[in-house]
Length: 285
Image 1 (cartoon, rainbow, N blue to C red):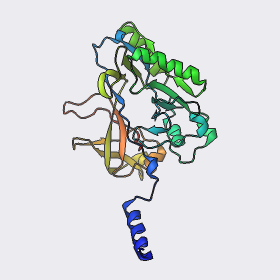
Image 2 (image 1 turned 90 degrees about the vertical axis):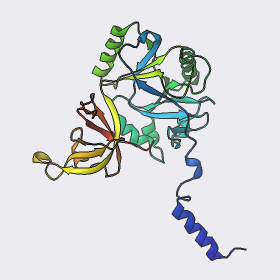
Image 3 (image 1 turned 45 degrees about the vertical axis):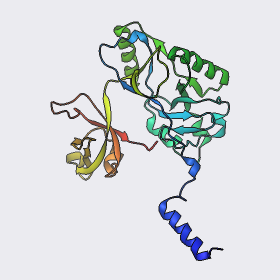
Image 4 (image 1 turned 120 degrees about the vertical axis):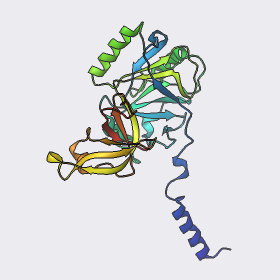
């Protein structure tokens, strides 16, 4: 029989290794999902289904549990997923346009708040691994939502447009209303994970991620607060981001080493993002 000191030493070793800090079941294997490429001029939208790009949190239902795209489980209330089908669903947890920060706070909590979750909808936009082309999957998603009969389980509205002019009108309508942009999914595409032209995103700006390497002091009305973030891009180059912050973020900016998401419009002659604006701290979903 092992001595008590041996067990104590083993327990301490596990703590140091981080193996006892969280349940092993709290992280599932990351699912293989479809990801969007950027829409390019010249692509005929007539062959695509078009939907609004929702500013929510992507969530996968594996037939039994809901988890972030990272594989980490989402602590959704039992009533929220009761009645979901025993098949894989891919969608977006969503409250409404411009509500990402509030939504993020709700779905990241380990102890779910029923009242807060009562505001959340699961917007279904794909059936991972399902047979048939996307048009067939659109029909299946609508049937799934109708059969479940849950107000918070909805199929994302999918529309067809005839040409570029119709696509532009729909895009302008969504953006004017506070939406992020559009998603285009090729109607005859079979399901496949990864990035391809089967799935495209159309937005009025581009976005990317960077790592915070320094806090640059502010001047004038921002004296004593954050003036700009110095961030490092994936290629090692650095960029100043001085706009997009609210007063709270200028007082308590993202930590050095944190990853942020920023928006920009095009690139300079040197290939750096133009008009970079802070969007949010990247959540560990």
